Image (cartoon, rainbow, N blue to C red; front, side, top):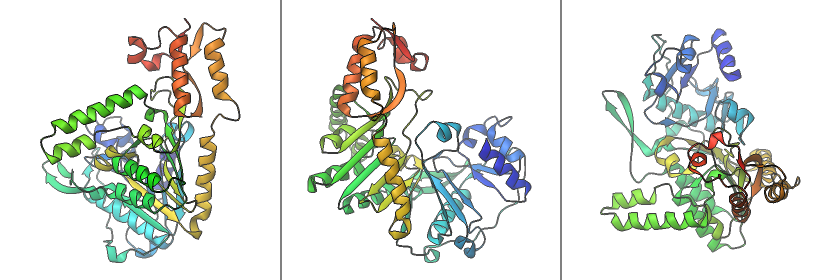
Length: 415
């Protein structure tokens, strides 16, 4: 609400505000009273694309119609959605830079490309067309300390009766290739904080790098959603093998390999120091305090951060970005990310939250056992021990009601 109000005040000052809004894709079906309609009524031009708009970036006073503006404009980007959950509950990051010509021009070109190939939400309000400069590769300023990659490069535009359509081009993986190159170039350390780890090229690059350099310091902090039990690991391997055996074409084989495989066990068993942000026996968005970061720190001197989940879905189904910051100009930023990672990786340890919780599960006097609780950073073995203890203490935690409606159950009856 605060961001929305600030945008409204900007319009009142005469600022041109354009929004490519994921929500507009649904709001257009019945615009009355929607968030998209409210934005347009307040003077903001709203459009949408036919893919999931997963970017979270803002360009302020950027190079819309002047290259010179790239020297003074602002770029806001990172993992955080503009939502109450992102602002108050989740682990997130937002990076604000000013006057970096390479980033401003690159992101402005991305916005222009998406805007040109978007569809009008239209709550019956006409907006004046904004004239923008054309930004080509030759116009970009080669800055060795920053690099941006976008999944929009994995698509081509088809014109349909409904409007421009982003259609996937097989064989392209613009952001995954960028991250794989970072991993392959690491010399000392790779630290990853990510809500997901379901990208085959990225995970396989990590595994290969650890095999090549067993002394590499690889730490991975994931959201609870990425934990899988030993039995689920066996099951997903069997499913993958069945899919590959049945595949009759190379295209179908590619689909099998991109099918949302959970790589946490494979990467952990390859040698990564891995923990999960753990806050409930069973995950549900209504109470999850998610580890929503998407960043990598390489060798203590480079950080890559953006909207991009480490997953096939992020690469091939959504519109995403990642920005790489490195070198002396950004060492302070890298240090801030390192501090953040160190704090996250020890969540709850000083307070002894895991030991206290396990004692309460096993020996508590209450007839109810909490299954939604304060977050803590746990290893795979600790999560497995926790889940076994809950199953032993509670008679109903794996019942049909608890499985189908986890949001209704924040505790379970002690046996």
